[in-house]
Length: 502
Image (cartoon, rainbow, N blue to C red; front, side):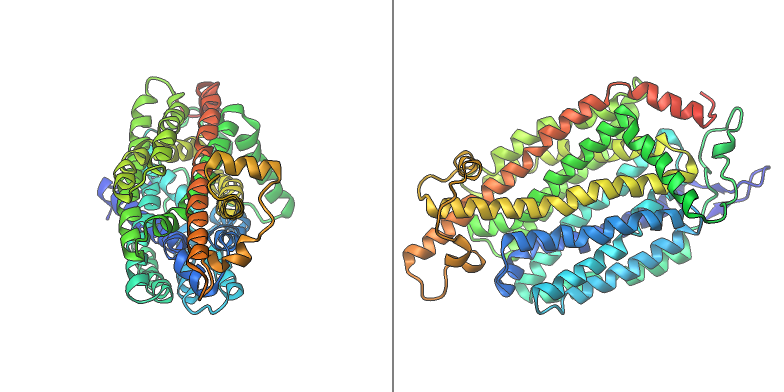
């Protein structure tokens, strides 16, 4: 799959082989997101079975996964800067696939939470080394496109997880769903180990004129704690100390906070509001969301790579415009009285929304030297996922619980604005919704009035919680707009610092 080495002894990888490598990494990322997000599709079944609150459901999909995922990402990335990245990725896939399968054996909230920690432990080993590998296989002018293709695993995995998870939960159980989706990872891990070659560091960088000692990928120095902190400090200075990069990092974090938060409760919303079963909800949210999000993810990278030839500012302007357009369309979809109309509208916003992934990852990779790229991704993901993945779903679950409390105590006064007024005004009501409606439903044998009151309160609360989370996209768009200021100079200086020819 590789051509002979060039005159300087540097291996030459064909475009077809690069495509195979990228395809396998996309497959791994797809499995990553199937195992990560399937809990949102089957969450209602888990909630009903284990009698948990939406806050607890949010913790399972968010913080309990994100904690080890974020904390271990940095040390794994530092290993990826020194050792074989393919080995690290293969081992990570085996670990998270095994813990995903174990989730299907959980009989309590605590046990399921422990297994979700394990899934996060394994998934921490994919993206930092994967981003570094992709950056060594693809030159800077194609890097945002390649990373957007890799990021296509997000909507593809979310889609497949929703469709397969919903069908399995409906026809078998949520436990079977976890057991089955965890199995394919073992096969992919073996194939990746056999097929993907470890490229030299900085393999696809432009010729250096003159060569920069910092970026010639010297032999890995001996480990020292002081040296590790020095490397982390250098990468942190790039991500958080440079105006345009900082605002792009804030943009991707805030957008992901809203996306993870709302996405966790969109499947339960369709079940609660329209009475659809898990298989139907999986098809709707998976196919509709996957279609538009997939297009947006790919377009974001390819459009930005093209527009950046005019001005690198488009790496930030493309996400800013896309998120600003997507927000009101999303809100309109969740205000519809029928699921058919909502689903049709949801075909549109993801095309604009997900344009932010490829450009952001491309800028981060292009701003740091080759021997710090896995670390840059890990630090970005640490900040992003601890706040966004760790905080988004619990925040949305918590605010849904608060809206439900308000709606239950203020019949006829429902609505997002009214609920926010009650929340900030401290007037949610005295009667506990969680006690009156355990698991979001009236107890067996309850009156028809209570059954209807529980259902109506939860439906309106879920709609309001999703809409509030979606509005974070406008905040993110503002940061991307700020990030466009000075981005051209920052990228030019990064190239100069690496000693690359113009």
